Amino acid sequence: MEMTILRRNDRNGVVVAFLKGIVDGESAQMFEKKIIDLIAQEDKFFIINMSETEYITSAGLRSFLVIGKLLRGRRGRIAVSNFNESVGEVFKMMNFDSLFAMYTTEEEALGAICSPGPETTVY
Image 1 (cartoon, rainbow, N blue to C red):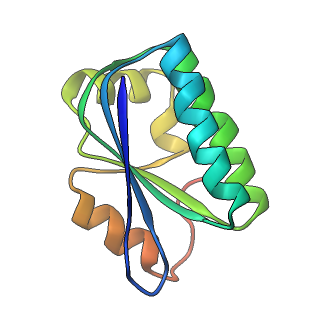
Image 2 (image 1 turned 180 degrees about the vertical axis):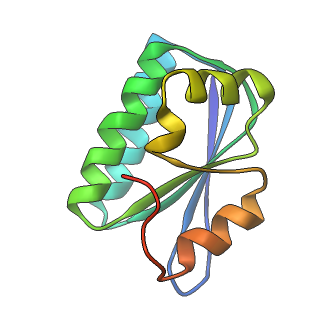
């Protein structure tokens, strides 16, 4: 798995992470560590763009839970965008779509994560 981090220069400082390939045990640990390092630097708003993610295993899902819990404690937000059918099915099958905000496009995710409206998901 490859991961690219972009920082948005908007008023809320949203971090966009692009996951490419298969998110499995080893790569999930790398993903989790990189995001946790950013959280430690006071970043609180994340969009995970999964347009090039082929598949995600239970280890990858666990990383999302760990990151979500950390962000919740810091009043942060995480959203998933641009997921393919396979990744979307895994999230839905595991009910992660009720925990994480999921958007078809990065632009939709950015609009939602930056709006001060009521939370519709746990993380």
